[in-house]
Every structure is written in C-alpha cells, then in structure tokens.
Amino acid sequence: MFTWHFFTGGRPIDPVGQQCHRGPMTDLEIVMSKPFVNLTEYNTLRQRLLDAIVDTTLVAVRTREVVLRSINGSLNAVFTQFSPAERELLQAPICEKKNAADIETALTSLRSFYLEGARGLFGCGLAQQYVQVILDALESNSPVVKVEGMCAVILWATLVEADSTDA
Image 1 (spheres, rainbow, N blue to C red):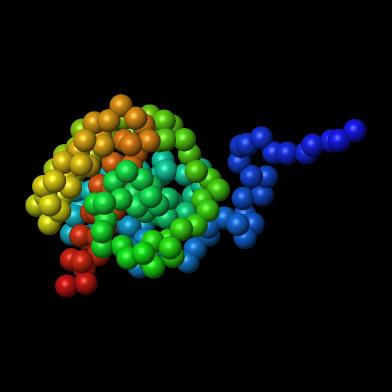
Image 2: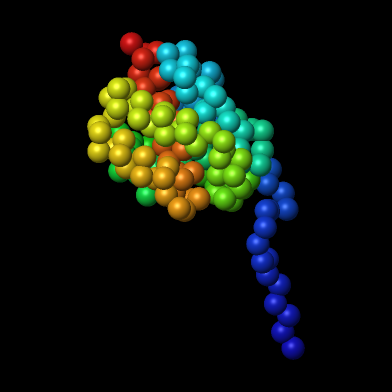
C-alpha cells in the first residue's frame, strides 16, 4: 500500500527561509519605500498600496511585490525601461502574497484617486496610450488586473520620482 504525502496549499510553514525574498532592495525599491519629495500627491496611494500588498511588514517584500505585479502582469508593456537582465534580477519568490480581491477590497475607497493618479502620469512623461492602458486596468472587472493597475501607477510614479531626485 502506498501513502502519498503532499501539500495542498496555503502559506508556507516557515516563510523566513532562504526561498522567500528578503532583500536586498534595488535603488528603485528604496525610492518607493520612502515618501516622495516631488510627487507628494502620490504618497497616500503609495503608502496604502504598500500596506495592503502582502502579509508582512518587511518593506523589501512590499516594494518587490509592487514591482513584480507591474512587470509580470498584463501591463508589462508600460515598463519597457526594465531590461531582461533587470527583470531577471527582480524575480523572487514572495511567500506572503495576498489575494488580489483582498487587496482591491482594502483599497476600494481610493479607486477615484488611483484613476486621477493614472491621468496625472501623462503630465509626468508617460505616453497617452500607456496612461489609457493603466486606466483600462483600473476600470477592469478583474481584481487581479485592478491591482496590477494600482501597482503600475505607483511604480511609474516611483520612476518619475527617482529621475527627478537624480537630476
């Protein structure tokens, strides 16, 4: 008689192990982890998304999950500035992922602000067609796509913030 032992899902028993991302953070993630100086109107959206995105307080995990949901999802074409090598570097197992429906529910009250934030990206150098792609994502019926849209707004704002603080 055979006995099969298998794991049927849920969070890992010990998410602190080597298999889970714990850092280091990229320069872009460091910018995302701090309040924006130039794009202060995005700070509330940034902080609320970072608070809702994963089940841990580790900022390295929070910022990485925002980046991964942006570049690995349906909006990845908006982020052409990430080279294949950078995309590969960013790939990391996030053990504390949250369900997109839970994230969307936590951020529902900010929906109109994310839409306004996406529109504001046009003035920050994002092409109109990409702004429209993000707006379409934010208006989607899919919680997964909506969360990708929220992450895209914050990641693009982070890119603009990083460029403006470098200048």
